[in-house]
Image (cartoon, rainbow, N blue to C red; front, side, top):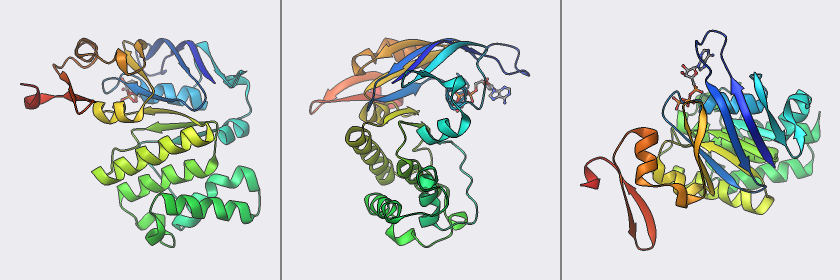
Length: 255
Ligand SMILES: Nc1ncnc2c1ncn2[C@@H]1O[C@H](COP(=O)(O)OP(=O)(O)OP(=O)(O)O)[C@@H](O)[C@H]1O
């Protein structure tokens, strides 16, 4: 589905290669979580996949096609992106989400498009916001709308850059639950960065730990260990089982 091989990238004004040899594979309907310190290159990797940056070496295959050769419009239809900073125009919440379907309807939305948006609004508990102007919403509310718009697009791959950064605990859980449901029901793959390790374990099927410009550890949840977290983040954690659930204890709670 998504196969990144030996990807390298350097910003012109940056003295070193940010991505030095990234290898990563994600299957259809799988949720991959990208983990790493601030500045380790997570957003840069997303930008390479999205075509916003051009790799200096390596390949990115998406559904068997090389992404650099895919026309920008086609790429925009098949890959949805929710960045950390979200900017909307002066649109209502309903119309903003509807815009996620523009590649399906072209000039005029049809019945199916309205029905899809209404379902997402109900699933994401956005009924009370539907007619409001997005520019008047809080950061967390806007983040939910951006995720709802990506869902409306029904792409092959959704890329989330810190999707829960502005959200309260209830909305974090709602976003993770709905995104997981969508991935499994519609076989949409998700690649997301997340800083909260417990949230990452709750959300992901596969985990990719970035260090020194490469994926240093990758695998299912069994690849997450105290030693790996120490190596990647340079912190001591304790991993415990409570009621058959794996919990990562950080800070004072690990003593
Ligand atoms: N436009 C740019 N020009 C030059 N250097 C950049 C640019 N954008 C990012 N960088 C640098 O590239 C490195 C990787 O940045 P990136 O934003 O990919 O990290 P990240 O892992 O997403 O970080 P965070 O967890 O803080 O969001 C950092 O050292 C950053 O300073």
